[in-house]
Image (cartoon, rainbow, N blue to C red; front, side, top):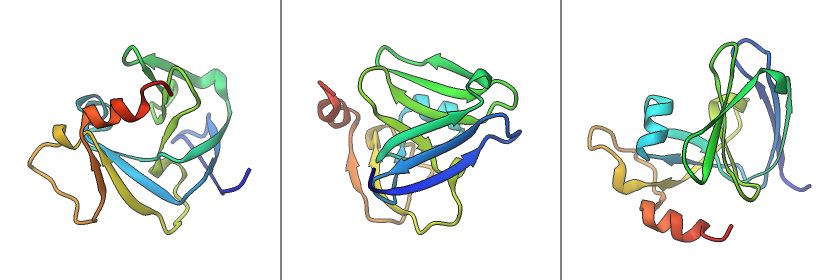
Amino acid sequence: MEGMTARGSCLCGAVQLGVVARKQNLGACHCSMCRTWSGGPMLALESVSEVEMDGEENITVYSSSEWAERGFCQRCGTHLFYRLKTGDHYAIPVGLVDGGEAWTFDTQIFIDQKPNYYTFANETHDMTGQEVFDAYQGS
């Protein structure tokens, strides 16, 4: 598969990840669930085409909505992924696999749910929650 490979692990090392990303880009999700889960906007790799996980026995998956679920290490609590229940879409928190790559921050989703107390300086493609649902409908 074409793209860059990034590797990382949870805080305790019980789960090891390898991901292939089609582009070196990342996005921010401002939805209320991601902000609750992450303690702020979730910065994630969105163009992930392959995910390999070692230590799957240490992963707990939480069904956070009708359409998506979130995985975390049951030992240390590290957030590992957000994924759609249908299709192959994964969002991987960039801090999990960041090895100092020159990431490009280019997208913000659920911009209509972003609180006013922070703003990113980057020029990004911004999508409302409805635009995100419309884009992924049928995926």
